[in-house]
Image (cartoon, rainbow, N blue to C red):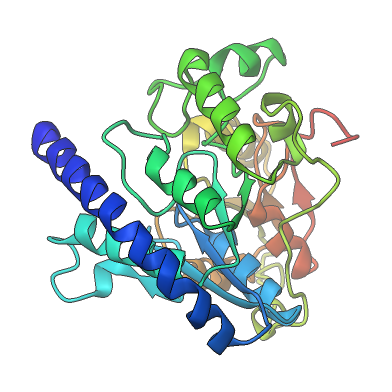
Length: 326
C-alpha cells in the first residue's frame, strides 16, 4: 500500500508539473474576472479552528474557504470536504490534486499548518514540496499556523519540565511529530517558503523566528450555542458536575483528574466527573452547558480551544498554565 501510494503521488506530481503552465496562463484572466476581493484558502489538518478562522477572515472582506481532504469526528463545518465527493474515500488522493489545481487557479493566499497542506506526501507529517513550490511560482502568499501536534518534539517538551505532554505518553509519533530530526528540517523548509509562521501559547517553544503576537483562536461569544447554559447543581441533594473533554487522555492528565474527583467523593463531597470523548463538537457543547466546573488539562501547560468555549459559557475553568506570559 505504501509503494502504491508513493507511486500514485509521484505520477500526480508529474502531471501537475505539466499542468502548471496552463494554470498560470489561465490564472491571469480568471483573477481579473473574479474582482479585487482576495481569495483565501485554508487547508491541511482538519482541525476545529480552521473553519472558524476561515469564517473570521470572511468577516474582514476576504473570500475565504476551508478545504480538507477528510474530517475528524469533532466537526464537519468545512466549506469543502473531499471525502464527500463521489467515491471520495476511494479517489481521495486524486481529488486532492484537483483541489490543488483549483487553488492554484484562484487563490491569493493559502493558510496551512506545519505538517502539510492539501497535497499528500509519502512521508507523514511533511509537505509535498510541489505544493509550496507552485504557490511561490504563482505568487500566492503562504502563511503557516501551528496547532500543537504539528510542532511538538520530545526533546523540547521534556526540557520544559514535568508535567508535560510526554510525561504519560505511551504512543510516540502518533499525535505529535515528536522527532526533532524530522521536524527541524521541515520547519526550516516552511520558514523559507512561507511569508510568515504564526505560533502561540506553548507552541512558541518549538518555532524559532515565528510571529508570536497574534492570538489566532477567535471565538464569537455572541453565538447562541454559548448562551443556553445550565448546571445540575440545583439537584437535591446538590451535585457539582465537573466536565473534562480529553481528545487524548495521556496528554491531558485525565488520570490525575479522575483520582482527584474520586478522592473528593470519598471525603463525602457530592461531585461527579463527566468525560466527553469522541463526540462531535455540537454534541459536546450541550454537555459543557451542564457543567459547574470545566477542567481543560493539567499537563500540557497551555489552554486549549475547549477552555475558550467553556469560558464563553461563563464556566469556571481549571487549567495548568506553565508560563503565564504565554
